[in-house]
Image (cartoon, rainbow, N blue to C red):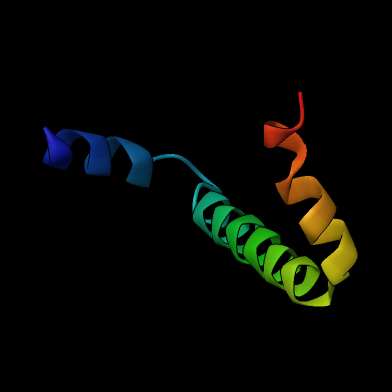
Length: 55
């Protein structure tokens, strides 16, 4: 099954760019997420963490 998919994908011209784009989007998303987490204000984090408990 994997052999069939691999051979089929290798026959498509320009397909090699999609894994690179996917990795770039994935990596960028998590870098931005980590940056936001480390730079978020403590008051905001505390306020948001209490939201599920406030009825």
